[in-house]
Amino acid sequence: MSERDTDRAARTGPPVGGPGDAPAGERDGSGARPGRGAVLVAALASLALLAAGAGAWWLLARPDQQARDGAAPPRPPLVRTSEVQAADKVAITQTAFVRPVFEVDVTPEVSARIAALGEDFRVGGRVERGDVLVRLERDRLEAALAEAEARVEQARAAVTEARVTRQRQEELEAEDFASEARLQDAILGVARAEADLAAARAAETTARRRLDDTTIRAPFDALVTARTTAPGQAVSPGAPLGRLVATGAAQMRMGLTARDVALLGGAEAALGTAVAVLPTGAPGAGPLAEGVVTDTDPQVAEGSRTTGLIVRVEDAFAMRDPRPLRVGELVELRLAATLAGSGALSVPVEALKAGATLWRVSRRSDGAATLARVPATVIYRTRGRAVVAAEGLSPGDRVMLSDRAGALDGLRVRLARETEGAGGGSATGRTEGSGAADPSATSFGDAGSAASAGVGSGGAGSGG
Image (cartoon, rainbow, N blue to C red):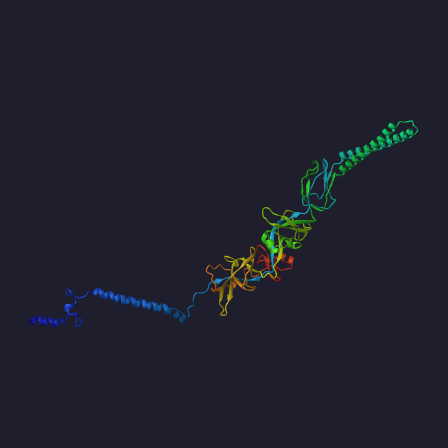
C-alpha cells in the first residue's frame, strides 16, 4: 500500500459494515449485502402488533374507567302497563230493532165516503181503546137498514097469516069440511113464513152492523204510526186508512252468537234476566228502558246463525224519562253474564299480544322491573277489554300494554309513570266501545266505568 492509500484509509475510517458484519465472503454468493426493504417490513410488523395490543387493552379497561367516571349504562326500554282485574261479570251487548207486540192496519168494512176523522187519528197521536178514528157517511146504510126492518115486519105479518090459515084448516078438517091435503098445505105455509121471517131478521142484523161499521174505533190503546186518508175520500172494504201499534209493550230479538250462548250456559239460562235498553251511537248515555228475557226464539236466524232471546219491555211507547222508545228504532241491548268463581281475569285488549300472550311486569327485590311471558286463553273479547284465563296471573298484577318486538323473559324494563293504572285499570263498564261513565250499570246494581268495556270485578261490575 502506498503512502497515499494509507492517508485515505485514515480519513474514511473502518468499513460501513462494522466489526460485526460478516466477512465479505459470507454476504452472498455475489459478495453483496442484504437490501434495506426487508428491514423496513419487519419494523412495520412490530409496530402493528404493538398497536393491536394497545387497542385491546383500551377496550377492556373502558368499562372500568366509565364506572370510575360515573357514566350510566344504556337504559331499559320504557313500557306502559295496566292492572289485572278479577272478572266477575261480563256484559253481552247486541243491537236489535224495537217491534210492537200488536200492530194493525185501520181498514173499513163497508164502502162509503169518509165523513170525519178522529181528533187524535194523526201520525204520532195516542188513542185509547174505543176512541173514534174514522166516521163514514151513513145515509145510504141507514136507508138499507130501514128497508131490512120493513121486510121483517112483512115477514112477521106473513107468519101471522099463515098461522091463522092453518088453524082454520085444522078446525075444518076436524068437522070433515076440509081435506087432509089442504091442512098439510096450511102447515107448510106456516113453516115458509117463519123461514122468511128469520131471513128478514138476519138481513136486518146485517144492515144494522153495516151501519155500525161506519164508525171505526181503536181496538186497543195505541200509537198512530200512519194515516193515509182524509175527509171526503171514498173508501172500499179493506183499503188501509192508517196504522196502529199497541202502546202496552214492545219486544226485541237479541241475537246471541255461539260464544255468547256458551258464556251464559245456554240460551234458556237467560230467561227472566233483566236487559238494559240503550240508544245506539251515544256513548255514556243512560238507559231508555229495562226489559226482561221472556222467551227464546225456536229458530236459528238463517243469515247470522244466531240464537234469539225475546226481550219484552212494558209500556215501551209511553211517555217516560228521558223519552219513549220508537217503533223500528235500533237500540243496544245489554245482558249481564255472571263469571263469579270462574277465576276469569279482565285485561285491556291492548295487553294481548301475538298468540294470546300476556307479559306480566314484576318488580324484583332490587327495584328493577322485568317481563315474564304468560300464555292466556281468551274467553270473551270486546272492543275495549278481554276476559281471559291465565295461570300464573292474579288480580292486582300488572301487564304490559306497549308493543315490544324484542320482548323476552327476564327483560328489564322501565314503567311509564303517567300510564300507571291507566289503559283499562278498571275492569268495569261496557261490553263494546268506550266513553264516559256508564249510568246503565245501576240496572244491575253495579257502578260502571266507561274506560272499560265489558267485564266486572267485585262491586264494580258490568254496565249491563
